[in-house]
Each structure stands twice: as structure tokens, then as C-alpha cells.
Length: 173
Length: 454
Image 1 (cartoon, rainbow over the protein chains, first blue to last red):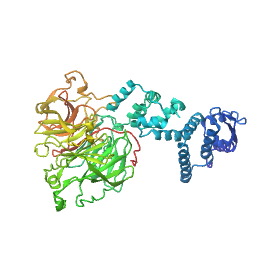
Image 2 (tube, one colour):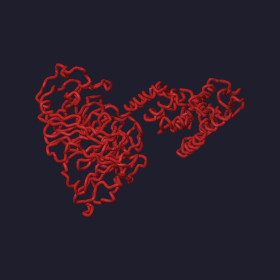
Image 3 (spheres, each protein chain N blue to C red):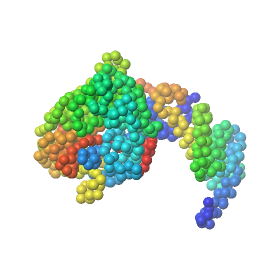
Image 4 (spheres, rainbow over the protein chains, first blue to last red):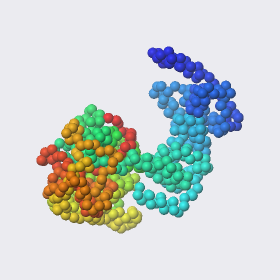
């Protein structure tokens, strides 16, 4: 991969390899420690910037906003995307298949899906965040306001005046 | 489990921004929190900017050459939609035969063999329509395009058989047409192929017997139009009828057109089009007598037994435009519209200063002043003798586009009874005539299903 590139690039590559083999400890808000590869942890932009800033790699990273159950599931995603290659068509197809199964399983438990979405948001894991928000958006698509309220367990709190406004706008739409 | 308390506002925003316009409107009516999120991020205005809700110009097809051009305000080349179709990279087909536009629907054009989005310069090759099983000798048909990006990025094409007497089986000449159920070939971008779909008739009306339909005076070269509005496709068919097809319900209904076009010899081709969310019909009889009709549909009629009720054409306007067409102030200034096509693209001498796209065109009807003659350059000219072609409805204003015998395109505001000149539309030969015209509303959504880049 590094053939033909300059010495600086080769050095950076070597450093990347070395850092990729380092292990990092993430701690849930319940105090449970999870040891992951740095490549996996780097899926999170939040952790990546802390590592690159020379932060406390050895002490590990406490994550006060994420519980153990959620963190375990997030790490499952990061391991798949951080530790595996995605260069060939087959490799990319395997990852796409993983994503599909991963989100289908999450979709069955909405409360847990929201927890994972919030963790992905907090940790800035772009791919996971796109996956979960799209899944929630797909639940909304094609539904009437009443059906959306039922699906999301939302109380109806619009005033008669709001309703008039909406009716008015609908006739123009 | 209440997601409102569970998902913070900015996270909800990240979810809602992934929705199409129709779903955003529904989300806005869910609760206070959702309504505020949709409004605070102006999602509706952002999405609306990509939708076909702005008139960009007129696509006009001429006879003889099959050439078409685009009549619009002068603008920078990059903002002109792909008019010469040179981006269709489809080597095994000769595009010359394909350049005639058959239908426009919400920013998509249907050509002989392609569905094209000129705004994004993307296209899709349409497979050949299979033979029509119940009338194997009928090979010609009119096609309708079903596309509404506020609901779905998918599009359908319907094929409606065109009855020709000597190609019909003798035994069926006295049968009513269309039958119920009515089998139609429908291409859908969801499957990428033609399929037979069955439609049941609503109401008693048919177009008549097959003999009547094929014997009714056929206006040769007459262009017929179709409209897709609120989930229903309205196609102008033979024997002065419109067929309203609702794909979602698998229903169809025959609606007789007003104004006796078929038996009136001196008429221009009529125009069936969309005007401010209504189905409208423009008929010009004699030399300059203009009629504008709108279809009234009673909303509760669907379950009623009295099916003839609920559908009624209302004459909105009837006037003889003769005196107005013969003299009106001509437009020579920077507000002038011009003719763009493959030839004029190279011709620098015809270039007018481009207009900033953000600068709105000044419609005379939007000005409060009664007097539309404002610039010093404008003067009253002796103009055309009569109306030579109907170019369509403005989809969002009380305006129709007409072409007069002096080759000028004029708009007529039927509420204020005012004519405004847009400029000269070039025809190259004396024999050229306008075959069809499509008020074009660009759709800027990229990568519609099945579409390729040029």
C-alpha cells in the first residue's frame, strides 16, 4: 500500500499500524470496562480526537452517558467497521449485510434503538448514527400524524388553533 | 415509551431531515415538539426548493424536424435545462427519432424511448411496451406519466391503446370501450418493467362503442395532453373524453370534455393542463375565441350511486381575443423571453444579457397598476391576426400561454383580461407549426430510481 509514497507517508503508515494494534479501555456509566482495539475505538470521532490529542490512553475513557448494554452493542458495530477491511466489493457487501442485520435487530426494540442512537450521537460515530436515524425516519414515512403518535407513543398536545392552522396549510399544499 | 422525552430536539431534527415533504407535513401535525423542530430547521422550505414548484419556461415541439426548443428568459448556459438531450449516452439508439417530447409531469419528460430529467441531466431507457393482448392489432397508444416527488421518488408510465377502425376485430365493434375491468400496461420504476394492471370503472360513462370511438372525427395531428394531480392521472383520449385513472385504487372513470371540440372544424389543438391545483382545459374556436374550463370534482361523490354527479366542467372564461391579439405593447427589454435550442446554443449574435436566476420575472398581473405599458421601449405594434396555437396553462397563476400568427408568445390573464407579450418564438420555415408545448417545472432531486448520468 505504501509503495511509491514518500518517506513521511511510510512513517505515518507505520505509526498507524502500531497505533492500530494498541488496546483501549472504555468504561460504561456502570463502571464496567470494555477493552477494544484502537482501530475499533477510532470509529468514534470523540475518542479519536482524545487519542490524537495525546489523552489518557492508558487510563482508559470513562463514558458517563452510556450504559453497559448500549456500549456493548455500539462496540459490536465499531469492531465490525474498525477491524475489518472494506476495499473489495465482497468486503463491502459483507459490511452492508452486517449493517442490515444489525439494524433489523435494533428496530425490534425501539427504546434500545433510541439509546444506541443517542450513544452514536454522543460518541460521533457517523456511520452508526446515519444507520439508526434512517431507520427511525423509515418508521415515520408514509404514516398519518395519528399513526405516528401511536408508533412513537406520543401524547396529542396540539391546540384547536394549531389544528386550524394545519388544516389551512394542507389545503394549500 | 415516549420518544419526545427520550430523543433530544437536535437528534429528532437529524431524523426528520431524512423525510420527504409529504412526511414532513405529517410530522408537523404530530405534537408541539415535532412541529417546533420541523419549523425551526426550515425543513419544509429546504425540501421545497428541490421540488417542481417554479415555472422555468416552455418546452415546445415543432413539426417537420421533430426538433424541440425551450422558450424562456435569457439565462446563463449552466442554468438552462438540458434541451438538446446530448447527455443521453445510449449508443445503440439513434436519438433523432427520439427527440419528440410526449408528456411532461412535475419535471420529468417522457420521450419515445426515455424518461428524462433535464434539470439534473439524468435519464432512464424505457423498455419496449409488450403487445396489447386483447387487441393484438392495435399497436399505437398514448402514454401518461405518473410522478409526484412530494409523495415518492418513483415514477410510472401508462400505455393507453389508440383505437383504429380497420385494426379492430369485427365482432367487438359494438362493445363499449373501455371495458371493466380495463387492462393497461404500466411501467413502474419500482420494478423496472412493464406489467399488466387491471382497473375497474367508476360511474356508468364509457367513451362509447369501439366503432363510435374509432369513427369519431379524428383531429389528425392533434396533440393530446395528460395531467397528474393528487394521485390521479387525467388523459385526453379519443371521442372528446378524459379518462381519470387512480393507480392506487385500481379505478378509472370516463369524463366527457366540454366545448364540442371534435365536431368543431376551426379549432386549435386543445390543451388539458394543470392550473393552480385544478384540471383545466383550453379551447380556441374560430380564429381567436378562447374558452377556459375547469373540472369541478365533488369530494363526497366517490361512494354515491348517482355517479354522473360530482364531475362537472365549469366555463371560467369565454372571450374573443381578436381585437387584443391584433394590437398589444411588444416586449423588447430585458424582460424578454427567447428561444433556445441546439442551434441557438452556438449562435452568439442572439445572446441577450443573462438574467440573474434569483430575479423574479415581472408578470404584468402581479403589478397593481392597471397600465402595463411602463418602459419607454414599449410601443403598440400591429401584431398577429389570430391565435395560432395554445401553449398551455401557467401552473401557478391565472395565466394561459398563446402563440399568435405574428410568431409572438403572449400570456393572457383571464381574471384581469390582460395580455402581456413575452417575445418572439422563432420558427425556421414557413411551414413550421407548433405541435405541442409543455410548461416546464424543473425537479432538482438527483438520482431518481433507475436514472443514469449522461
